Amino acid sequence: KIEANANKYTFVWKKSIENFDKKLTEKSNVLYDELLKDKIIPEIERESAKELSVTELGQIEEKLAHVVEKFTEKIEYEKDGTIRKSIRSKRKVPKKTRKLVHDFKERKCAYQKHRQILGQRNSYSRTDPDATFMRMKDDHMKNGQLKAAYNLQIATNSQYILGYDLFSNPTDTRTLRPFLTTLKECFFELPNYIVADAGYGGEENYQAVLEDYERTPLITYAMYYKEQKKKFKQNPFLPANWSYQELDDTFICPNGRKMNFRNYSIRTDKYGFKRYLKRYECEDCSDCPVRSQCTKAKSDKNREIQKNMNWEYFKATIQQLLSEKETGKIYRQRKIDVEPAFGYLKACLGFTRFSVRGKQQAHNEIGFALMAVNLRKYRLNKPENKGDSPNNRKNRRLKILF
Image (cartoon, rainbow, N blue to C red; front, side, top):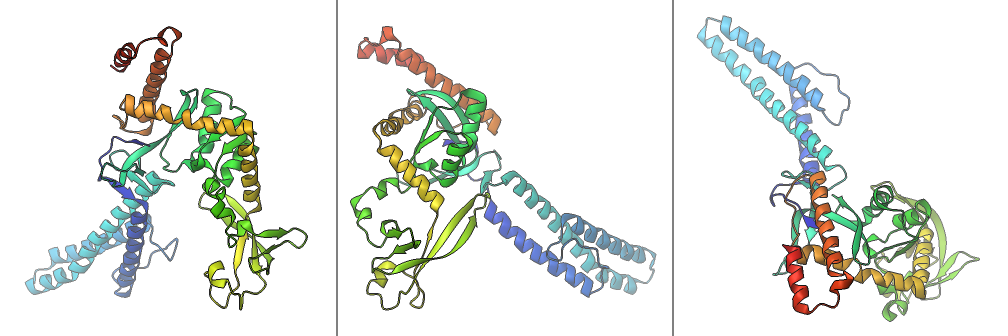
């Protein structure tokens, strides 16, 4: 993640916008009902009974302006001071309400604009709307840093950067598919193996690599290393360690009781990806001596588990691939191939913050910086320079840097 050229305190949060809009909707509905109850304005035709749109608020404002204008005309034509004073007092309510409705309309427009800029993101910066607030690495006092930034993705080979792209999405999981598409369309044909760390591991990504791109994923998942440990494998209360009876489609719990298949279910995430689950329930958890260790469910309920067979298949495939000598060696190469490229960029070239604003401008700037990383490495690794003394190599680095 590279820090954007944006001020720290110019954040706009999606949850805050939703909460403010919800309160505004409630206030505007109450105000409209009061106006109808007091017969200040006639009823308008509404699209939805739950919420007043910007257009409808504009209509209410026009009707209130018309009411205020009528009162103003009466005041101008009335000669009696007492009556004029009485009309002015009647005009106060619609006049004040018109200003309030105008404010509601302006705020409603602002919230819609914020939503349009946010898209599927949870935040953005006012000074650089394309940048998203992301959790950066801790500072020297171990304080978490939340700053406007861009998520940089690179593809490397022998520590040379072959392709890159910049994203406003803070999570790596959501960047793999669009990044692979960018590599294929703009840089090079995808290799046989797609190698990435656990931040990219997920059912959707595995499925995309195998089916859409027809490549082999060498991507670990979040629990991969934990599942290899002895402590995990010997824990009898984890469903991953339970024996499965294929003929009966049942699992056997630590107490020897059956977990029978109950039903299928589909879970759809906010991005529209569907996961197909199988739900199992224990035949009877009553009087179980290990119940407190096995589940936290209420005493009158049996333990339930969910199994995603598609996900289990992908996990088994990844475990098999990484256990093989050839593919395991390819995956281990990632650590000494990708990470140094980021190290050269940040530590050697000192590129930790963009100097321009906007995603397109930032994309161009990081492209020049990554080109400098490649040229620097190429110059240092030329055959005629490999036998140089350390002092000569140091001087050459300084020339390259400056």
